[in-house]
Image (cartoon, rainbow, N blue to C red; front, top):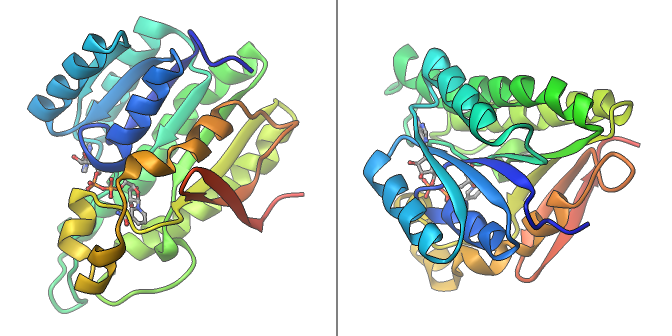
Length: 246
Ligand SMILES: NC(=O)c1ccc[n+]([C@@H]2O[C@H](COP(=O)([O-])OP(=O)(O)OC[C@H]3O[C@@H](n4cnc5c(N)ncnc54)[C@H](O)[C@@H]3O)[C@@H](O)[C@H]2O)c1
């Protein structure tokens, strides 16, 4: 499939992996509706991508806020119509122990990861069905299958992302919608990593731009191809870690 002119909605595009994916998609000629709560940074990214010939829309939004999220999704759909691709990449990881975390902290991380993930999938579901298919990628993590200390919200959030992927992949088969989870398959140099990686991991980290091939590959999938899988985005390639559906 030629991705030129195809539309993607991508969250968390102001920096890190989301920024790298946006750049890779502009190189493919895709049109992008980009969301992030760092408005100035997102606007700067959109200007940079436009200078590279990209057709991009900046949608500053706090994805922990359901009403604001719905409004941003409506703007994206109103501007570009049905997307071929949805990537929910935005996430927040604040390391706090059970003794430190408050309900409000917990809800914020969960809402960015899970509630916004649901809302985004829900919003594109019917349009993708009407369009004959599409591809959804939900950003997961090692925290999607294992527990880590001080990840009282992030780990359950990423486990929920894996669950959402499995259920939607099953339901999406009938409608030709591919749904996969993606985890970085190499240590990546991003602001999130800068605050959470060990010094040893920082010795090995790579620019996230070198792991975007998996996202380009998955953008071309529908339910007749790769779906229902947990995928590692590796340097220049991808690996299916787990086949959870079919
Ligand atoms: N960095 C890693 O090693 C690593 C490992 C496993 C999984 N991941 C996942 O990969 C994805 C990208 O991670 P990253 O390292 O680029 O992180 P990052 O923190 O550098 O980027 C995340 C982006 O999400 C945005 N965001 C955060 N809260 C938001 C909110 N309330 N509303 C809207 N946008 C918000 C941030 O502004 C930022 O631009 C995340 O889903 C993360 O969980 C990263």
